[in-house]
Amino acid sequence: MALWLRKLLFKPVLWASNKFASRPDKQRVFKALTDLHNCIVQQQKKKGLVISFDSKKEKFIIFSDQHKGAKNGADDFMLCEPNYLAALDYYFQSNFFYVAMGDCEELWENTLSQIKKHQQPSFEKEKQFFINNRGIKIFGNHDLFWQNDPFAGFQLKQIFDCELPIYEGVILQTSVNNKDVNIFCTHGHQGDKASDGNWFSKFFVARIWAPLQSLLKINPNTPAYDAQLKTLHNSMMFEWSAAQQNLFLITGHTHQPVFESLTHIERLYRQLLFAQQTKDTTMIAALEKEIQTRKFEYTHISPDYLKLKPTYFNSGCCCFDDGDITGIEIEGDCIRLVKWHAKQGRPQRMILEESALEELLVLINK
Image (cartoon, rainbow, N blue to C red; front, side, top):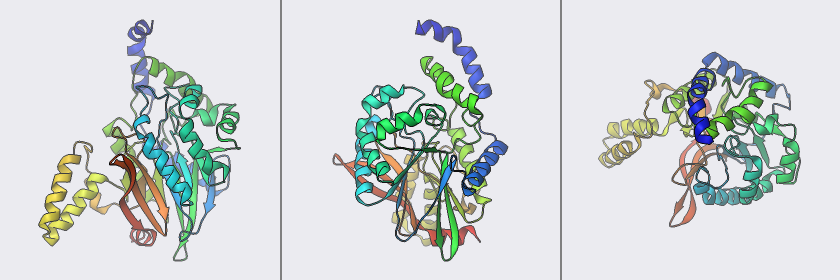
């Protein structure tokens, strides 16, 4: 039956996906981000919260895009689960505040009951943060269910044993050298006509459109799987963030880590230029080897990557196919891109990039 339906509906569904789905429009993206930011600043609490913090004392970990599924062949999270569970243990014991930044549950391909059945270990670890008021949950385009289903609140309380509001974003607000700094965190699907439209369009995508595409095994254009859309998404997020005052933007959505507005390979090229200037032959050889390895993962280099303001960051994802996960830490007046990976069979934390907020603030105000 499924094969017959796929043959019958494949072309019209693919046509509709290309016509109506998720290619971002700059004007829509900018307006959506601005409107959300303003709503949160104006304390429209249904949209999100402003959390004031002392950057010298308080700590945050931001993970997104787990895409937790039913532990079957389509569950992208399954290989990453050990690293994720170990990371949550570390951050809870180290008194971090947890920002779950969307697409945590893969509700396009699975029912909630399937996910609840198979993802109890991660739910139990996340619950530690939420019941101790040390966590916030943000929805993405693959878990729109949490925002538009009338029984979502009941389901969340059943899973996490506490009342857990769902937000579209959060602003982490601190002061650096007597200047207010806003760190604006949201999933990053804003401006997507399918996932960021009115109530009906969100309901249609979450409950009808996505299950239909899953049944027919049609993967819609989405930044997580489309290199061109990743580039376009990163460019728009950077442009919006660079136009703001004393603001850093952190998103997920693309599954591609970005630090200081640069992808990993752009940072490698920048390091290579520095190594060439200092004539560090050992570093040059190591960087050239790493670039050769990574260039197949990153098909685009921004032509002006050396001039970008360091205003945009992306947490990457918790569903890499090698079992690694990436996230963003904020601690001790610093922001970091971290990776958790298995070393000799044991999860290990690795700092990939790190910068002081004070230094970044100087750079974005040049």
